[in-house]
Length: 122
Length: 139
Image (tube, rainbow over all chains, first blue to last red; front, side, top):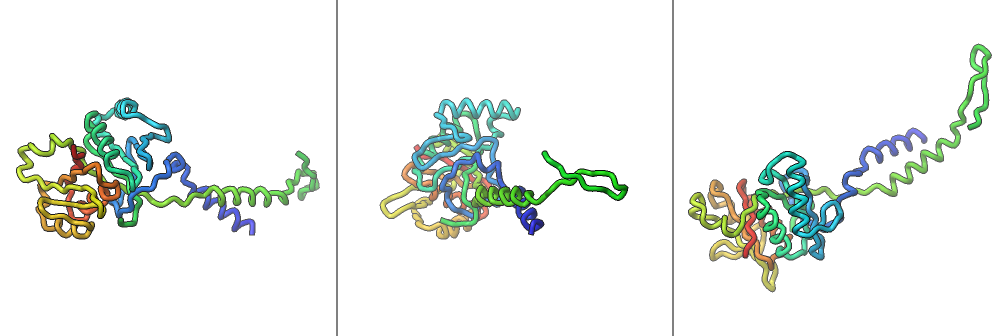
């Protein structure tokens, strides 16, 4: 009995995704995606109210610019090579997405990824 | 901590650790991991290049830019290419599949469209075989 319980504990310890705890729960659009990990050098969350946040901290467009530049400096890469992941609420107006896109484009960011809930279709 | 002393083969006293209460700790750990386990849904991504409205129209390489407009009206999201308007992702994939893939495709997003429609358009481009996909926020 104790062996089984220990095996279960090891299983739960191994499969616990502690890194995911930092991600905000956002109702992402359901799509098949590209079959890659939803990761980025910088992850911007846009909730159902249109609030922008990074690692759970609200950011303004100005602060977003500062953080983006700092992240590029920290990684030692140009802004054009920075990979941005945007996790936006599926029902949100694209106006908010466009505002983020314009902010990144003005900074010199050239590529971004839209987060999606894997395995579904809208 | 109290240890009782047993005897080894040589008759010397050796400490014995009672492990009876160990099962309690193990069960507590099990309950903790069961309760805190979060079986999160897997996330994926849809990549695209970022373009501004002014960048997307006048480039010499884009003599005939293939542009999908994503907007929304009273009936829901609409994907349009030129004169043709589509309501479903499948229709859009069908049209995109017949287009040349080399020049790439621009997804021009209007503020009225919901985010899920944008994701739907980006997914359609990918499913139709496009590699060069550009996101253009509409003015």
